Amino acid sequence: MTSIIPAPDLLEDATAKLTCYPAKPKDLRQIALPLARVPNWQQKAIEKFAELLRKYKSLQVYMDICARCGACADKCQFFLGTGDPNNMPVARAELMRSVYRRYFTPEGRMFGAAVDAYDFDEAMLQKWYTYFYQCSECRRCSVFCPYGVDTAEITMAAREIMASIGVATKYVTEVVAKVYQLGNNLGIPPPAWIDNCQFLEEELKAQTGKDIRLPVDEQGAQVLLVAPSADNFANTNTMMAYGILFHALGVSWTTSTYCNEGGNFGLFLDFQNLKKVNQRIVDAARQLKVKQIIWGECGHAWRAGILTDTLNGPLDFLEVPHPVHICQYTAAMLKRGAFKLDKTANDDVRVTYHDPCNPARAGQLLEEPREILRASCNHFVEMRPDTIRERTYCCGAGGGLLTDEIMPIRMAGGKPRAEACRATGANVMATPCAICKAQLPEVMKHWKVDCEISGVHDLLVKAMVL
Ligand code: SF4
Ligand code: SF4
Image (cartoon, rainbow, N blue to C red):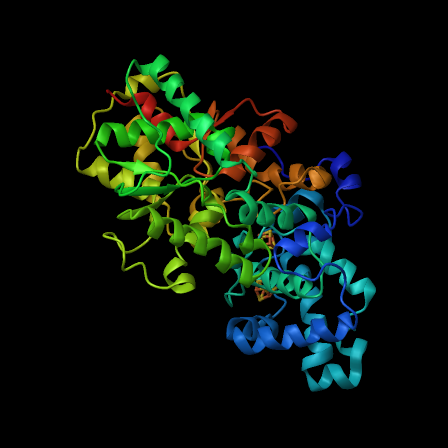
């Protein structure tokens, strides 16, 4: 097995010097956050911290309960990849706990640094900005914590506090602003979305000889599909696969130009934007009078999606009144024998499966993608048991880290995933996540692993007998 000790070149580069670019006022305005650091920012931040402690009892518990046992220390891909001790989950969380002690515990107020309690000053804010944006909110560390501390939730709280005082990253805020302006993370305007769908319909005709539709804004369809917008633009095989799937099933479906995005970068920023972005999906379903919402191949979209009832009210206006992931839907159809597959169509493929963090650790989606791959491919191989299912490694770019200015961090964080893949000898790694599909080809290239990245449904429809 290849070592996951970080390469020296990355050790040198992947340090605290690398931070995400700061947010631009035009995007902050669009998403109702302060346009610049607010006056009295320390006081405001501590007030926000107090508010979150009142609101989320789990956060209070995570601040108090850590025994510093170190069981999480070597479980984070960003620590494994960079060797930077601040990327140990316990050390990352300690940045917040030290501020908690200083302002919210009697001993911290009295004894300060003597009990590891520190002011929320400029230097501390810079550490928060660096290291809470070198955490992909993947929750891997929480699987190994004997007390159940969820460092991802700590990261979310820290980002929420920073956002409230006008400190956020360009990438995350830009994406959320694009959703409000144009309905999707990539900023694809409605006419371009429609054009892309028409182009892909022509491509489907050329490939299959059949009239397979990618419908847009169709009132009264059975299904509203909220796929990642990247599927319309970059992962077009996956987009075409959705079309083939619904065509084979004879199910009417549509995408929406008001909300053609399952991804929710509000999850990586603050609660108000998480809720507002998700609301667009519900509004689109109501406008189009569909009977069911299905989330496409996107990891964090599903993490936000399963919260829809809680965040945005009951989905009881739908015939299927709960969120459904496309892999759940397809696996259920497979069990019913709804389509015929010829696995030999994938005999050129030795495929492994990458569990995206959010479906695996926050979305209860472990079996269905595997069922689809086993039904579609003769040569399916799992990665090492300590690197799959709920123990999966992050691709290295989740949580709002898919941005080029921190490329060395991304490549370092992706190394454990790349090495686990290399050990299988697979030539294709399937994954139902647009961020993983954007990040993993770079990771494989960087670590010289000869493996292509594919969607799960891409392989399904390759085996489908139409
Ligand atoms: S495993 Fe849990 S208790 Fe142990 S150091 Fe990490 S967060 Fe703290
Ligand atoms: S949530 Fe993931 S990225 Fe963040 S500290 Fe834990 S293992 Fe690392």
